[in-house]
Every structure is written in structure tokens, then in C-alpha cells.
Image 1 (cartoon, rainbow, N blue to C red):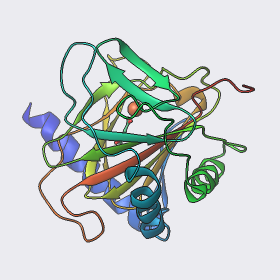
Image 2: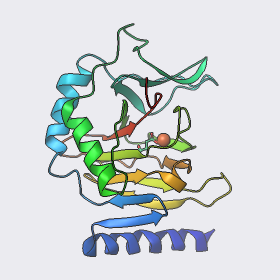
Image 3: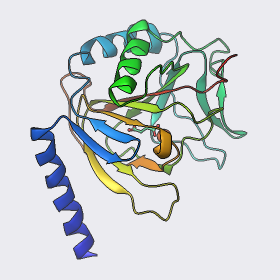
Image 4: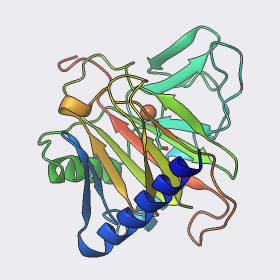
Length: 230
Ligand code: SIN
Ligand code: FE2
């Protein structure tokens, strides 16, 4: 137990060291952290999020099929939105709270996501879904795979804004020990190809405030959820 904790600390320090020298941290074939790559666009992404998305599809805490209220608050934009309810997990073209289509994906979002995917070696990424997660201190996301999409050819692009978090990145099976990856404001994680179905999650968020987001972390997760040619 003690040994495990020390190993994790050493890994955190090593990764912080890496960030100072290089702006990308490989997490294995098909997965990479692009350090600080959203710093220049963060204010624009957050403004577009508030004005174009949250104004029409406000934060809500979804309930899992097992009946648990998720600690992470969510919204969506794009043609499809990820939804959890007593019936299961799925992508839905409509916001169940309003009955209306999800807000369109801001042009800034789609452009940024495609740039990040290309930077990680995935050209031509055209996301049709952006799930937006808000973590307040204590909120967490347990290890899971992103597998509600129609096909797994396209990568996932995940943008961290606001308070820092510890991202868990595991392997194809739940048995694989998950690595702890500290993510700061402006970091972008891209995983696809052989890593597309790898398990991942977020440890409970620590207390804090950030000048751009206040007392929370906001994560934008871009995916191609629908069929390649609708
Ligand atoms: C997710 O798995 O949907 C979000 C991951 C994160 O918040 O970094
Ligand atoms: Fe996920």
C-alpha cells in the first residue's frame, strides 16, 4: 500500500518534469497528452461555451441506469449528445430536459478539436458530439470505456479547463493498472487507434478556485458518435 502511494508520487513528479522539457507526454500507442495546447484558446472556448451552449442547454446531473445521480454536471453540443438515464446510456439528437435539439457545436470547438486530433496524428477528425463535464470539488468519474459511439475509427479529444485533476488512464481491460496523469488547465488528451477503447476516469477533484472557471474543472470531450455517412 505504502509502496503504491510512493510509486504514484514519483510518477506525478516525473510527469511534471516531462512537461517542462517537452509539450507532449505519450501514454502508449495511440494516446498522448498535449500539454498546455488549449491555453491560447481557453478564454474563447469558455466564452463560446457559456454563450452558445450553456445558455440553451444548462448544466444538469444525469442519473445512471442503476439510479445514481452523477457527481459530474453535464451538457452537450453538436448533432448528438451523450445521455444517461434509467433506460441506459446513449447518444440522442435532443436534449431530454428541453425536448429541443442540442445547441450546434460552436465553430471554435470543431476547429480546435480537429487541430488537436491532427496534432496527435489523427487527420480529418470531424466530431459530431461534444460532451461537456463540470467537476466541482469532490466530483469524480469512475473508470469506464467510451463505447456508445457507432464506430471506433475516430479518436477522442479531451480538453481540460480550470482546476487541475488527476486523470486515470488504463488499458483495454479493467484489470490493467491505470496510470495517474495530472492534468492542468489547457492540457489536451487525445486517444484513438489501438487506445480508443482504453479505460479512463477522473479522481475526486481537489478544492480550489481558478481565475477562468471559479471553483470547478470543465472538460470538453469531442467524439464522432454517429455513422460516418449519415
Ligand atoms: C470523460 O471521460 O468523458 C471525461 C474525462 C475527463 O473529464 O477528463
Ligand atoms: Fe470517457
